[in-house]
Length: 418
Image (cartoon, rainbow, N blue to C red; front, side, top):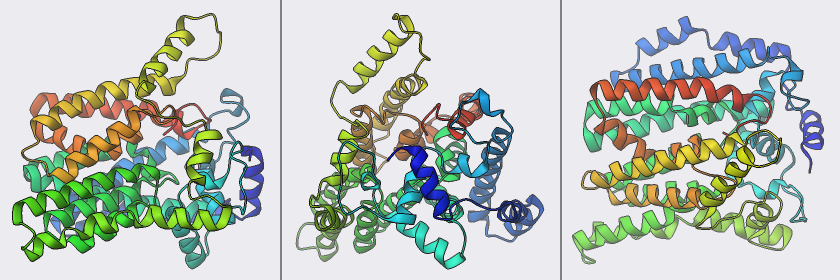
């Protein structure tokens, strides 16, 4: 389904906000009200929420400035509205899924909502119905709220692994990392990272049922969550090796790998009954979106970029390829630091990070861009823990500059994928 038809469908489904809605949202985030509420919170919550709130102000300031950009500068796809910025890229598909569900048949060579996992869209629909707001706003509310929860949980993990100072640096790093733009859009990462980080915290406290349920919820959010499956197996194996099968607590660790696939298995069963194939989502992503995987994906990305720059073509340079290749370098650098810190990082986090790295470096369409690197958050924790002083300040300045430069290219038009 072309984007133009989707825009019509979304508008017909009531997903565009009225001027009154936009005004009420702006009023609801007045800094004076938020600062007063933050001051009454426990210190453990105050710092992460304050940093997160300030980073969202920066992102939404970028989006509001983007609405003033003249339309001809970015072509017909940009309509100059805040809702267009929030629902850009994959967001429009999650909104379409919330509004219209899945079709009862597929053409694998045409875009379809079948290519997107269901849980986030279900929550968009449920919250939109409960609050009687347009889905574009219920999706944003979910992203903002779950992004805050994910930030707090990631900070708690950093504190447990490396101490309070590392926890505070991690929170700042995550909030200012360019990939966290998806917490300000209709995207799934807030939900995904809340589930995964929550599962890792549950493993820390040997709460295996909770860990398994959170991992199972994560696999209903998106394909990147399959990295939690080998991580769950390794966490269980480590616990059984430590306590032995006769230890009841160690035996309960089996719950995590048993429950972790529930989300993706349920989605596959639904698609089997709905469209005739449990692999329909994978098929649509592969054939319609041309999202292929292979060990040489980054090599081919570099080759295409080289040909685009130095070849005979006169088209624009693919910024996604540039950002992806730079992200691959960052990922390699971060994995070196992660390996050095392997004695301090639990096996579930190590395997999750390696799984995310493998999935993204082997993908044609989803290279190690900032959003994918955000999913590999244990790597960000380790960097925040190991880099201090002047080097830390330089890294924060650099990531903040990248945020300011890259965010407008993501919010407006179709220049840079989040």
